[in-house]
Length: 173
Image 1: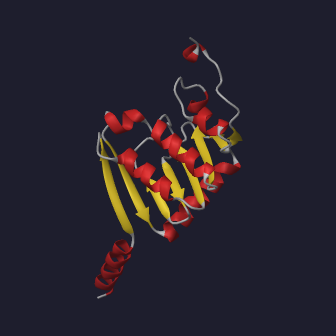
Image 2: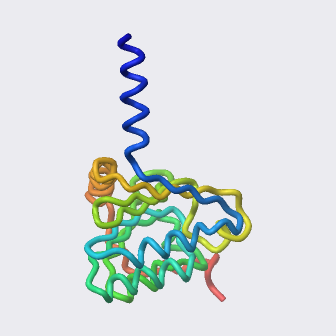
Image 3: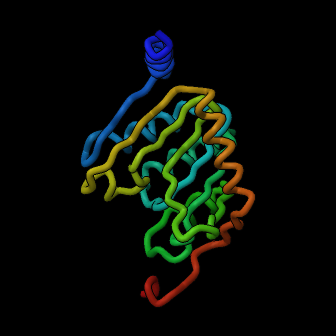
């Protein structure tokens, strides 16, 4: 009896969250990210491993211009990548940080207005949308968003401010 009640409780709990799923290639992941960023009214927290998508970077800058508090944490590889949107968002005045504490800061999440979570294997890149087999979940759940926000804050504590691209042989003309 207890296991039946637990199963019913879990089923109700899972159904309570509004969840959408998108797949790539060409399955609308980038459009779903941009659509959700365009709906933001208060805050957007980003953690990204790879970040080269121009439409996503533009949507973040547009949100920032609307007065939305936008903050970005990126993997240390974004300091030296030939193509990265890190400079674009940082030059637009969006606080941008590098998480260099880990071998790879592989999170790919956004928390929007403390209630919407975007997560999955989907990197915020053109290649992820057009070439890769990836997935994106859009979850409406304030309790879960609170957990993601706490994790984001924990990573911010050990991250360093992004001050621009570090030139290396890899990204010299």
